[in-house]
Image (cartoon, rainbow, N blue to C red; front, side, top):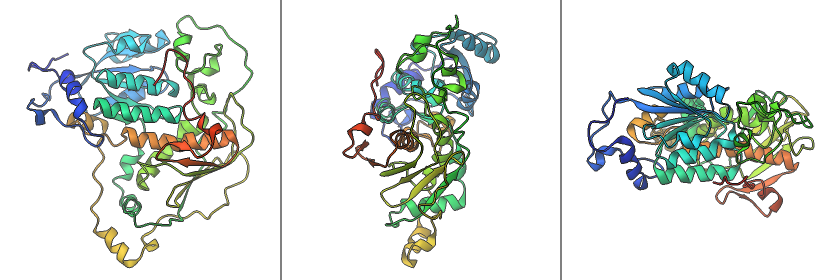
Length: 418
């Protein structure tokens, strides 16, 4: 790997400059008198979580950048070895514990594709170690993890991109840009728009199966490390691989598997990147405490009246509380329509690669990714509790609801914490 010719390395400079970064922009090195990174320099990269979505997530990390894979990490050593062999002919060192990988001095960028119960802890550790991160969706397993990630990436001045990219297409679509302007203008005081997502959430596919007995742990798997911050449970194979999605300990069913893909671009379009719903109304059967299950629909209402609705299309009645309709210029007065038409287009969203090179915030930055994940977490909590919930998006707590608030920041298994 090529090293920077000047005395101050990229990692040391960026780590030192991180404390002066803002949430919106990480100041580039040349402002402080350091030269630009030579175009020929390679970024040292690694993948943590080498099965399933891992190779695809790593490919997204590499787009537009000159990189060299230096590490591959997985709690199953066979998966790490296979990825190193496939992408570097075995040259990239393999690890079972991400903490040892993050000690490397030649590592700049990390792709994370573990199950979601590990996303926050590993992402924060990578940011603390001075690395930029591209992480698989969903961002987190519970709400408090997301706020901790937002704070960490702001504190350390690192770049973060969530592993879903629909908002980039929306930000170049004229109709979506118009809706974004309408909703971000503050002129829509009492919005009656209802945006429906019907189907495509893999509810039955990723519903869990309770009551499976313990099985023998594979020799290559560190099961204790797999469980990590989540409650320790006896090993059984459905708790790993894609079927991990059916267990509350690790993810949130099809809602969380597919939901960030669907609602992240919607969230940008309707200018909700910095807020969350205030009322969440579900229609679902009683939920199992251990595994995810079926549901009919969830309505999520924002403070301005705007509503997202997700309908599974796999169980129960269809949503019929309000007619589905979109936002329109016709919802505004002629004076306000003129104001919208005179507004400049929003700033272009930067890809992860461009954000890394420019030291600016990526399009799927931590706050936006956190708020999109909150849509899914709040919907799932309403399903699990079987009732309407009222939420304060600024304090990020449920209003006068101790039972629901316990799910926002559940205990983590020692020694892990956020």
